[in-house]
Length: 170
Image 1 (tube, rainbow, N blue to C red):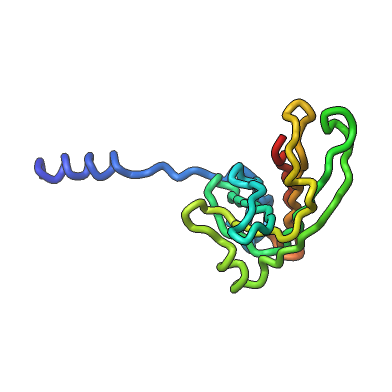
Image 2: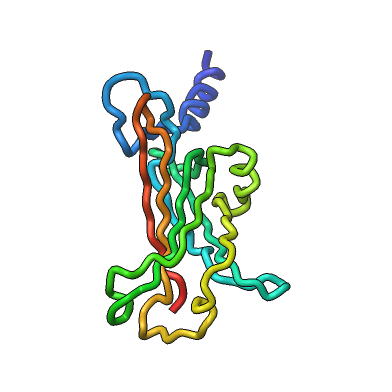
């Protein structure tokens, strides 16, 4: 009995504490507790040219669940390119372009997910030429990217909408 006691102490000290979700789902059955609770446009997002000289915006989107863990997501994603207006880009801005990405198409979803960065890497084609022009940092961001993600909610017959914005260049 003496030899078994230290083993039990060691095993119990290695047990990991379970953490609960940040978001409380309320009463009733939860259909999907691991849906995204947070979406972030990742700092890897950038404007770049491919070897042929064609310009792209490579937008990286990261999703986290209510526990703060990175997750994949199924739903519809709209990425907007907004050209700033006003002094130092302080105005509302003008929406220049919109790209729609269907992440409910599981084959497309898997092809866009980058396991190394744990983000969706979205190559956004044909951004306007003014993005390639040199800018002045004092003028503020050259453009903003706004992402809007819509997915079924954690409970039946609910919808969750997540949004984020990111400043591109300066």
